[in-house]
Length: 164
Image (cartoon, rainbow, N blue to C red; front, side, top):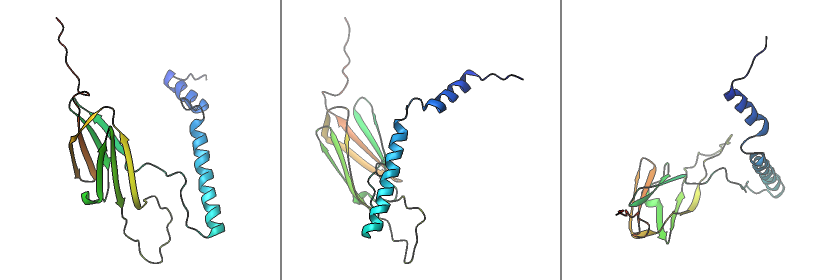
């Protein structure tokens, strides 16, 4: 009995075999992450220091950036953080977000099996795609999602041109 693969299955097999479209770069980054974790473990064992992460697992806060005709919108995830713990600045085309994430102590004599939630100060500078009006910035934090609306400068707004 001879079986033939559908075109979608052939594409999936090709991608698995050749790591398409990444062509191996993703594996190299994973190897570097693994090596960094091993170096952390080695230095903490040798010098008795707590482990430090050379390559954080992800950028905090995670953001989405969108726009309409008049504004750029930045939506950032801030679970468990209050509005008064966040500071915003707009300089040129850059939006800066600063703050500190505090996580309550888990208690005495606790042994972690996994620790992915980090506490501490954070800062993130987000380049906006066009010129902005720094006098037209609104921000609100609802259910852990910070929504920042930044007005576009007149230069960045699309202009409709009539054809004669």
